[in-house]
Image 1 (cartoon, one colour):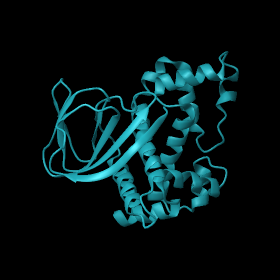
Image 2 (cartoon, helix red, strand yellow):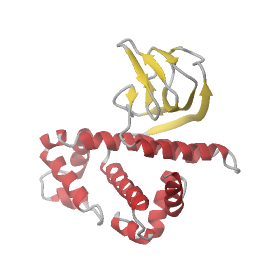
Image 3 (cartoon, one colour):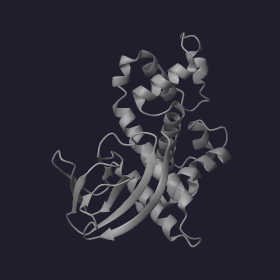
Length: 251
């Protein structure tokens, strides 16, 4: 899903400046501390720490902070919905907290407010949400046997160079048709799904093992540690070794 981040900022507020809100762009608000409630006409919903709300452009909302809160605001445009619900929740809240700390670092960096890192980190939040929901939806993908088989293949051989074109070659379907069916069933493109799985595996291995970065790169399907490190840094704004050290200091 193509999207463009327009504004990203953190703020501490006691009240919303506009409790009755209708925006010209989509706005995603993620709570670090505190919380708020909002209502789009279907009843009041409470949003707590490390949860968010997606305010769709043109839709009318009432929203109210329930306490002094630290919020991260993202205004964006996209080719389609990034979130399947106005109330956005995550399973891996530690990862969300880590991403928010990196956004805060980008804001306070001595070189200035690094918007490019913010753009990458917002994409990481979107991909995390998509991946978590894709994983919960994989049983639904069983209705499409081809997609189900592809997911099984990807997860089984994530450590290798994957060739999905060869995978579908003898299945009487073009790769373009397969890619459309995959995205429809899973909610992500094939490449985004593979990248998200590899990144999640890399994060887990960095946090839970003492394996050298080069071995983690190999286990996660990267051809060498230099490509892996560059890939990792574009998504976390820090190289793998620094990520490992900071995660262990937080524990």
